[in-house]
Image 1 (tube, chains in turn brown, red):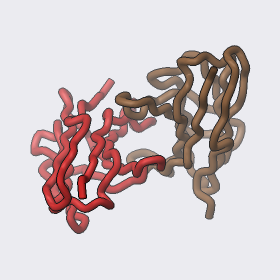
Image 2 (spheres, each protein chain N blue to C red; image 1 turned 120 degrees about the vertical axis):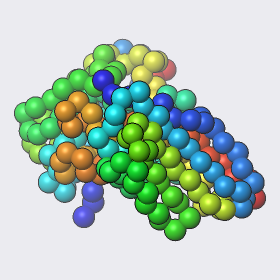
Image 3 (cartoon, rainbow over the protein chains, first blue to last red; image 1 turned 90 degrees about the horizontal axis):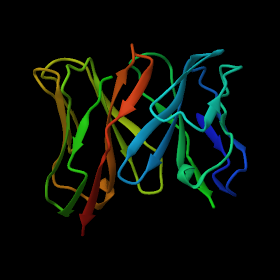
Length: 112
Length: 111
C-alpha cells in the first residue's frame, strides 16, 4: 500500500515555464488537497477536491489549476511559474470528513 | 472562515524539559487535529480531539481540547531529541470539506 505518492520530489523551473505536479493515492480516499509550505507560513491550502469531478479553491489558488478526473489522481498545474511559487508542495488525502489526512512526501519547487 | 492561531512559533528546550504548544480560535471548533512534521519530512497525523474538555495521551504527549472548544494544547513531558520537528494543529472547515492548519510550532531540542 503506497499511500499518497507525489512526483517529482524536486524541480527547478524558469520563470514563465509551466509544469504539473502529480499526486496519486491508492486508499480510495474521496477527499484530496494541495498545500504549499513556506517558512513561518505553515501549510496553506491551494485547492481541494471532495470527489471526482469536484474541485474548489483554497486560501492561495492564484497561479494554480487542478482537476480531478479520477478518485486516485489530483494533479496540480502551474500555469506560468513565478519566483513567488518557490515552495514545498504537499498533496494530502482523507477518507472523508473529520478523518485524518495522509500526506505525500512533498515536492520541493524552485523557480528561478 | 475558521482559523486558528498557534503559539509559539519557535521553541528551543534542553533535552528533558517540558514543551507546550497552543492553538487558539475565536470561534468554537467542532474538532481539532494534531500533526508532527520531522525536518525534511511530511506532516504525520498524531490525534484528533472532538469532545469538550477531552484529554488524550500518547506516551509522553498529552493533548487537550478546551472546555469551550476554542483552544487546544499539546504538551510533551521530558523532551527527547526524537521530538524535534514542527507541530501543527489542523481543523476541518468549510462545511467539513477541507482541513486548514495553524502556522505550526517548530521545536528544537538541545542535547
